[in-house]
Image (cartoon, rainbow, N blue to C red; front, side, top):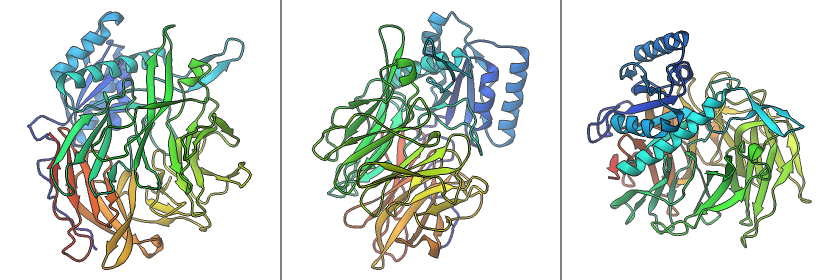
Length: 523
């Protein structure tokens, strides 16, 4: 398989099927707060900045320069920043009115629950390295985005961007988008999940390879715009995320939640609260990191989060549904880049990027229930790029220096580079079990540097033999995903503007990794 060019997906880049522009609304307190957000926007987007206050002259000048630079790299800018400049009590209705006028496809704002930089031990009050207006504006933006989606019925995709900068790259989204968000059921029907402003939306096939339904909004008030999708030993998808709800005393509770889909197209189980490791003190509990999880060979689900102290806490659900309390793992401080994998020995292991460096740490379970920490992994990862590999116990990541997609499994002397330098961004998605000419293959999909979906494959368990990459021929406005049915049939999906998906299956009548053409699904 060789890399090919060309695009078979419908519609010009940056336009929705109904002709609306691929508009990104950037909602911040003041113009200077939009600079870092605008600087990370990819070419092809149209940017509209909305500020709650006018800010100072220097901040407006800095934003003007950032918008001019965005235009020079291929973005479009819809005029100067819109300044609401209203009473704080009227910020929500004013922002809702602005969103109604803009009708954006995506919304970028700041972190509603930033991590602390200090703690007053006497009062228990954490301090933060960003103004309170950041979190307050983000909360208003989330409420306005939910209301806008409820009013239009169209998905509105939200990123809450961290103010702090990580080593090797920009501040990552506070609530990461899913990597392996496409799932194949027992009967081969596909289901796709994606987080939006109003909660998780779902698309699913009525028949294998047939008509789709969706996007439908799954019930879950207060869900934050991030999602983890992990499959149990039977291949059934389980969803984990964070839920944010207001308290009667003026505070907020942020808790880990879990739901599952046991039959394609049927309702999810109710969202079950797992609380958080610092739930007893809401100011600490609101900082809980985004969860990662994996099932062990016995069917137990292990959920891990970064806690208030920047170490790791975890809970275990046994196969009969009983949950343990939150327990603490000792070790170095970690960032929010946590990835759980099911190892070859059948247990679950955890990988995490260190908080203060780009080094990656690994925790392994022992027979007595204790965990050991390995600080000697022979690689470093860019923020937001760690992901489970198709092979048991292995991970994918982007090298902290080169940006190349790499593979590492325990015991290997070093990582295996899987592609060319600068070939894209973000964490790749992997699927195993694809059959080509009677041989088993692992499949990789990712977003290429030009914004298109890239598709690769290597013999199962042998990434060292090299990956055959090709341009899959469709635009990708977010991380694409792949799924393999129990019968070994491969499907690939990517998201396009307008709340639609593009889906392609492997053409079983032809040799090699050839897709049968991209088809739009959804309303």
